[in-house]
Amino acid sequence: MNRATGKPHGMSFPLVTIRDMVRVQKMLMDEMQIREWVAVVGGSMGGMQALEWSILYPDRVRTCVLIATCHRLSPMGIAYNDVARQAILSDPGWLGGEYYGGPGPVKGLAIARMLGMVKYGTAEMFDRKFNRTLAGTGDELDFWSAYEVERYLRYQGEKLVARFDANSYLYLLKAMDTHDVCRGRGAWRRCCSGQKLPSS
Picture 1: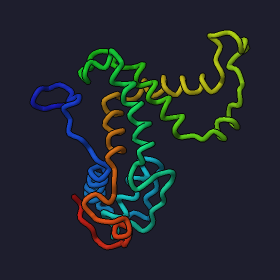
Picture 2: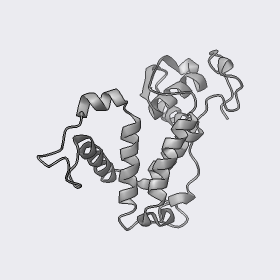
Picture 3: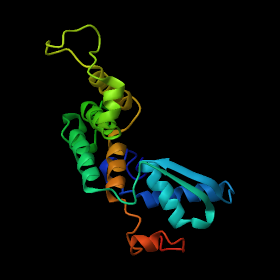
């Protein structure tokens, strides 16, 4: 909530980076008087945070386990995120991010999540998990029939909408887009050297 207005920040909230997230986690760690983590483990955005932990606070982390992540997002990753972003922004319910009190961009957010679920898999995984199986007993040549993979993606989209805020999703996508552990620190080899590096 914006304390000055008493309303949700919406799109007036400042940009949040992966580095910011780790700094806040470290503040909580200090508040809880935890000296070090035995391991920081994460996949995707969590992996970005785990890697940032190992660079920003190497003396506070014994082990870092990275799963399906990167030190900076590739142009392809940014492209996927922008398609998801545009699905939300083009939903009439988004209202420039000022949708609080209404349903919000439910269709756009659901589509963004569907794209995310496609991005998290591989062609082989989708073949193995779904094949070309129809959902229900419909006719494959009926326009409105759906395959199991479609049913799965729609379900994941609807499930996210019930528990997640669209503006928060936009901010998380942007945090991933802008993530680069080498920003302000020099070359990748220096970032991985284990020496204390700038935190800005």
